[in-house]
Length: 146
Ligand code: DAT
Ligand code: MG
Image 1 (cartoon, rainbow, N blue to C red):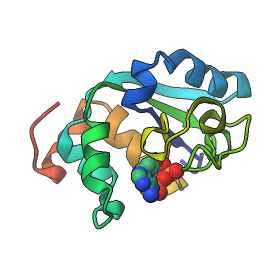
Image 2: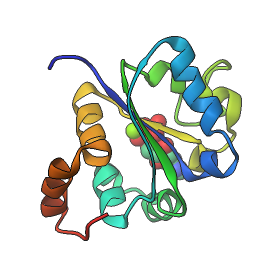
Image 3: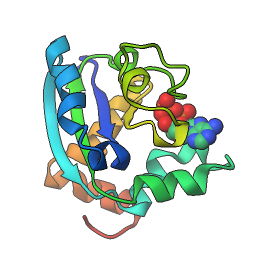
Image 4: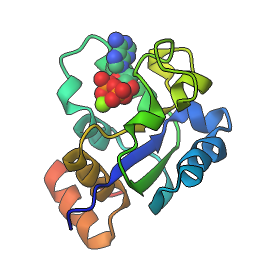
């Protein structure tokens, strides 16, 4: 519909550290409209789909292990949200950003945010869609249901 959306995911370290409220609160206080929200155990097949562009990187197996290691919180927001999240390496992320304020390690950077409107829409649909859209995803990744 032409409205930009971003898929935010509080990663397993963020959930385990009790940062879900803090992170969602930043998007709410900024004024972004929440489109969807859920606690989710990411299946390996979906993690691989989500990070498919990184599959040749040396850290890819660790990344997949980490993202599937515990529940994540999926949030869809209507807005471009990368600036609030900050740089991939939390030591380089500006103070005031989520990663700049709350994290120190690239491999434990507490939150994901999609990098383009197209990926934002796709990632929201993949995790927060209604049941009929989920059926299409299951067919696409040829995996189990979740
Ligand atoms: P971002 O999450 O900022 O969009 P990305 O898409 O380049 O960053 O990478 C996805 C995730 O992969 C990132 O949040 C953490 C992990 N990652 C990226 N570069 C890494 C590195 N050099 N070492 C370890 N993990 C890395
Ligand atoms: Mg990325």
